Image 1 (cartoon, rainbow, N blue to C red):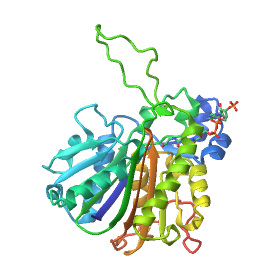
Image 2 (image 1 turned 90 degrees about the vertical axis):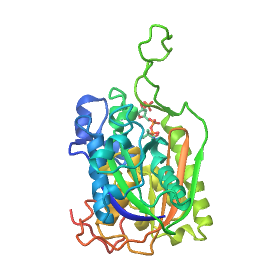
Image 3 (image 1 turned 135 degrees about the vertical axis):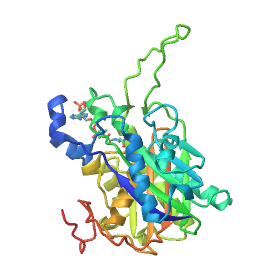
Image 4 (image 1 turned 30 degrees about the vertical axis):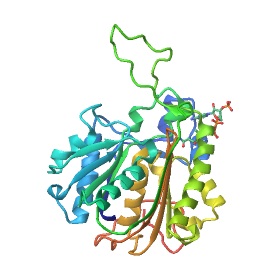
Length: 341
Ligand code: UT7
């Protein structure tokens, strides 16, 4: 599998930590120091389908393909604008595709799960071109009265079009049931024949430190595993893209793996944790800024509710785009690259 095209879109509305200070007992200093987040993008309405469509259209344009060329649409999302139809199905008409469409739910690791699924369809000869999207409206799942979780999240969408090729060198997907450390209960419904649950659904619930520990340990294990399968040292990676969940998690993984900070870029300070959209958003920013060169090795790692994780090593195959968009503000870029702001 090779990535043939890539695109991403963030909602227009920016919500800063200062704005959160007005509605919660929190502070810009606490959020920045504990998470690295300064602001996030938050959807104003039920516009996830449009965000995902916009990212998909950019990816198709970048690939030089039309929706009609797609054999499958695969969307990693926790929940689209509707419980059903699926987000992938809602997107189909907007991109002029006529292919099967399905959503895949693997929380924040969803994009890597979806890439591996797409690779399997392509390798099996069952598809030539697949649109793989990571799209999340995670801010509408958060409980905005709970300062321990809502400050972390942001919305967004990233998409790639993939086709045949040898670009995916190794992938690791893991899952183990641990529903207590990070979860959100489904609505019980109003059937008069159903007992109401003891605990009323109240958005995302999380034991932050447990998730933190899992994230660091699992990312290190997964990245080491995929690099080994790819026959490379992690230090040989041109880029290591970590799920943008917390700057402290990113720094801990980077330090323990002795990775060059310049090779571990991030945008969490601007985006917050966008769950399944996090990795494709960051990858697209690097690509649009002209930082990805054909032949470069990219390792990616994500983790989330489940608990699940996914990691992979890609060999990038695309030339930089003709028109470069200066990286808005990515931390830890190589010292010789100064993004315009
Ligand atoms: O995609 C996966 C999603 N989740 C994650 O990646 C989360 C991983 N975990 C984390 O990122 C961190 O654990 C958090 C950022 C969630 C929390 O940071 P922490 O350093 O683990 O803080 P803590 O939970 O130990 O809380 C320390 C204090 C507590 O007060 P007390 O009990 O010491 O008085 C919290 O009540 O900070 C308090 N606190 C806050 N204070 C101001 C928690 N949230 C806030 C807040 N503003 N937003």
